[in-house]
Length: 335
Ligand code: AHG
Ligand code: MN
Ligand code: MN
Image (cartoon, rainbow, N blue to C red):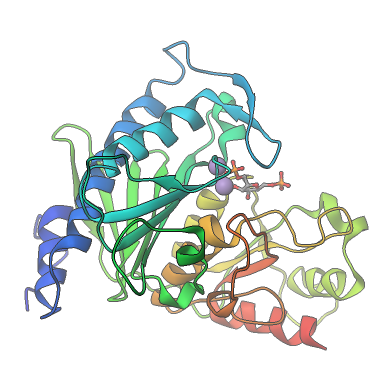
């Protein structure tokens, strides 16, 4: 086993190989998917970094499947991931938050055994105001016969993910990923174009400082959710008040809370009975990482990773972060 100390320079490629070598049965295909995602992440990062300079800010004038205005960078990120991933021979289908149907592997290319699901640009409404955005991905394995992947192949509970991760285009670009052997963070060194291991084996605090929720929806929440938020704010006298931080870009809010401790919540409300966030593109991958870091994620009644999806673009309420803080949500919402 290779040991990585805080002082050794470890590229993400090197780290991926080291982790693969700990899995005697690994074929190298999953590592190949991660390498290709790293390339896509660098390309998107480069574009995001020049967003204020190039003429790419603003809406593209089209709407995605959820009827939201697509930003030009959404489309760029989507296409970049598809083009980086569709010809490697390791995937049998992809699905994107930005596309109604699954994305098949083009004719002429080999089908692999893995499925890739992604949110190409999370928090894209923040691009115009220079607030960090991100990319989220989830990798599943197709069961059964080899060949083209189907929507049905993708409808697996999150605990079956074989890898998941996100990239945050913040004050620096970081990638955090897991293959079930801990959650590890890498920071892009722009001078050499490499992601370097900066946050090995991330562990999130048991209880946290930060509460991230859009409380403009308070009037539309059910009473148990209102009571829960009063608890987090220390208003019922049963715990110290958390600090509220909400950027409106789930990757950014999640990342801050993962490192600093706390809870991100997007509850159901009367206008959105299942909340807003997508189970398979946003909640499952972040829940996998959060659990690997010692945290937890629930929809209020069950563990996010145990939710059996019935639709690709399914939404779910989510409470994710420090284990002790998520436990309070579970307890107060289950009653
Ligand atoms: P996306 O840009 O991929 O559509 O995601 C936006 C999401 C998420 O990133 C964020 O936490 C949430 O929408 C914010 O929603 P509200 O404005 O309703 O709070
Ligand atoms: Mn998103
Ligand atoms: Mn998005």
